[in-house]
Length: 340
Ligand code: FES
Image 1 (cartoon, rainbow, N blue to C red):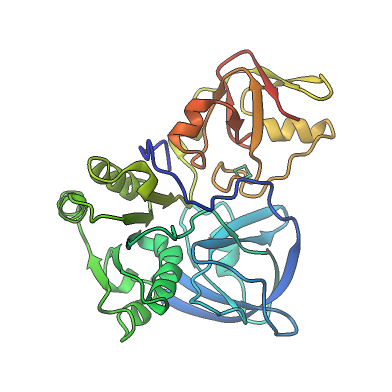
Image 2: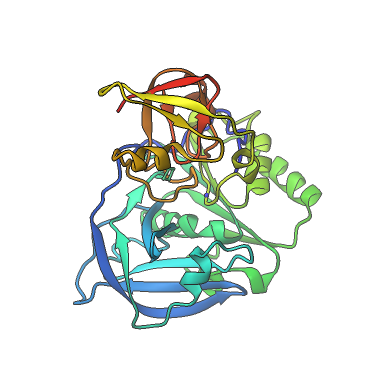
């Protein structure tokens, strides 16, 4: 859910939770796997004894422990009140580092560990209209939002962009009787056609409207640029589902970190994450995605200038310089003092 796009300004949601994540894991069973589109499978996860799973709000995601040391975040696609099973969808990525490959290897009946839901991409309760834009597998949190908004009789529209009908996940649900009047399915747009569409759609903002979007990096960047003239930052909400390869590949120099509480100072060699050095010295920070996407490892910075490589903090938060995602980010100064 990726570089420094220019949500220069966008914030993630009123209910953004940037606290340490809940470590509790639940073991669930894969009850049903369905092919939702080319390369996209959905997984219905239920408690081993049945019964209600922890409550969630639209836009929530869960951590899925795909394999040893491999944790990935997937948005819940569920409608309101659907606590008897979490529905997630995963696209098989050709460049998978194990996450989507591991998910697509699952069989019905397999057990898998997950976290309770967390929400970094919540609907804004003050919005008078909601405009939802999903690209590719980025439809998943928006599908949950759409079903909740529909059930609440809220004012909304959903625009879904995919390569073709065969690449359109949850096609039957999105084109079914409950949602079809609010959903526009778009296939095969080239970048110019997409820009023109977005400029038409976002050129004017209805009073009280809020914008939510999720999808591939180029898609997100384009939406952010089309929205910037008319949509104030606090009306724009977004979620990345992947790291920013360009930021991660940025220059790597050695620097030092100091832990404020103990005064311990450690060298962070080029190419080695802060979290890895800290763990080696017995000061493990909780992590999840290890890609700068989920916010789990968020840590305070008391001195020095972070070199942000994540897609979690907004541009304003990055400029403030008092927080860092140490699983990927580094330092622009020789020393960084962390609030640890
Ligand atoms: S562990 Fe996910 S942002 Fe650091």
